[in-house]
Image 1 (cartoon, rainbow, N blue to C red):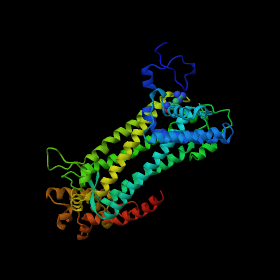
Image 2 (cartoon, protein in one colour; image 1 turned 180 degrees about the vertical axis):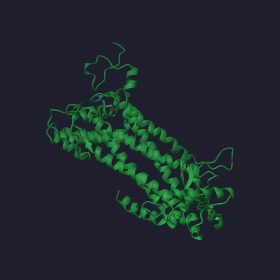
Image 3 (cartoon, rainbow, N blue to C red; image 1 turned 90 degrees about the vertical axis):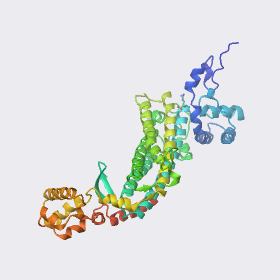
Image 4 (cartoon, protein in one colour; image 1 turned 30 degrees about the vertical axis):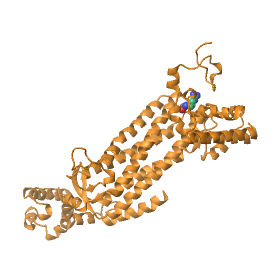
Length: 466
Ligand code: ARG
C-alpha cells in the first residue's frame, strides 16, 4: 500500500495517484466559486431536462437528477453541505454529492457538457443577476438626487473650475450633473445585459458535441435570449465579466468624485452640508469632530474596484483560445467588485438622502470670488455692444478695483464702474447678484432654476421607464 492519495473521482481515470497538497491548494476554486451554487444547479437542471427531451437520457434518470440537485440546493442553503477542496470546484462538488444521493444516474448529467461551458453559463447567470442588482441600486440613487435637486433647484452655490470659484450655479443643477453620470452608468448596465444575454451551455469543452442537444431550449430555460454562436468563443469569452468590471469602475469613479465633494462640502471651512449622525463618525480624541468616513471609504474603495478591472484584463490578455485555467481567476475579482460596488451605492444613497444642505453658507460662498464677473462682461456685450474680448478686459479692471477696495463687484459705486467704462448704467447691478446670475443662464442644460426644473422633469419620466 502506498500513502499516495486516491486520484480524483471525476477525472482521475488515467491518474495513478492524487495531487500533491500544494497542487490541490493552487487548483481548488471551491473556496470562492461556491457562490455559484444556485446558478450551477439551475444550469444542471435545465441541461438534464433538455437531455431528457432530446432522448439523450431517460425521463426516469432526469427525474432522479433533478430531485437530487434540488436536495443539494437545500443542503447548501441550510449550511449542511460539506464542500471539499479535493473536488476542486462547485461543479464537481455538486456532481459528487449527486452520485452519493442518486447513484449511477448522476454520471449521465455531464453528457454533452464540459466544465468549460458549465462554468461559463454559471458565471454569466451570476453576473446578469448582479447587473440587475446594480441597476436597481443606481435607480435608487438617481431618485434621491432627483428629490434633492427639486428641493434645491434655486439654491445658489458657487460653481468651480480648477477648484476656484467660477460662476454661481444651483445645488439642484449640481445634483442633476450626478443624475446624468449615474444615468449613463445605468444605460451601460442595460447595454451590457443585452450583449451578454446569450447562453454558452452546449459549447461543451470547446468544439460543441455530437449529441443531438437543443441549445435553444437550454438558453430559453435559463432566461437567455439565445445561445452563443461559436463554441470556441463561448468557453473562452469573459467579456461580460470585463464589462461588469469596467462599468463598475466607471460608476465607482463617479461615486468617488461625489465622495470627494462631500468630504470638502462638510468641512467647517465650507460648511455647505452637514452629514447626518447615521452617516458620520466621531473622533476618539477630538470631541468637536464629525468625520465623513463613509464618503472617504467610498473614495478609497474605488481603487479596489478599479484594481479588479486591471487584474482581470491582465489575466485575459494573451490567453490563447479556448479555455485555460487562468480564467478561474475571473471570479474573485468580480465577486469582490460587486460586493464593494453594492456597498458604495448603498452608502452614497443613504448619505445623499439625509444630509442637511446649508443654503446660507452656499449662497454666501457663491457671492464671493467675483463669481458674477462673467455676468458683468456679458452685460457690456449685450447692452453696450462691446466685443466680448473688450468686455472681458473692462471687467478685469472692475475686479481689480473691487479687490483693491476689498468689496464685491455689486458693492462698487456706479461712479467707480463708470470710471472704467463711461457707458455703464445702474442697470448693471441687476446682473451682479448671484440670484440674477443663475436666473439668467437659461440656455438648454444651463443652471437657471427653470431650466434645472425642466431637466428634473425629463429625468423623472425617463428613470421611471429605465
Ligand atoms: N473551476 C473552473 C473555473 O472556474 C471550472 C472549469 C474547469 N475546466 C477545466 N477544464 N479544468 O474555471
